[in-house]
Amino acid sequence: MDLFTWLADLGYLGLVRDYDVAAQSLPHRKPRRSKKAPAAALTGTQRADNRAHARRRVKVEHAISGAKRLGCVTQAYRNKSLACNDRVVVLACGIWNWHLTKKKKAI
Image 1 (cartoon, helix red, strand yellow):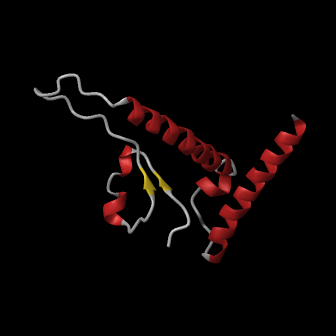
Image 2: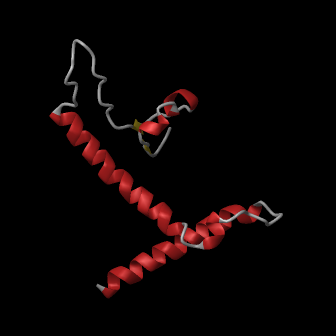
Image 3: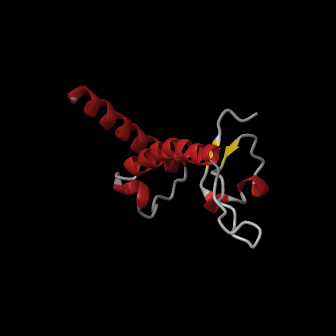
């Protein structure tokens, strides 16, 4: 049982096909124009769903980019011990979370 929901954009349409995902959240696709529907557009609720999806996803994107500010996360991994691989990412996320708590206290 999954305890989380996969947030993805339209570049990951094969996510459900490739992985056994219980809960996934993809934005609605704009329908293609055709002779039957020359002005194809999303409905108001679909647009609102896409905006809500983008609001949730941007928080995740900012958290990932914040953790990547530590250079060892983005550079080539040269250590021979794979056990340290997860530690580096956990430390980067911890440093970023610490930075965010210090930033909130300063405000």
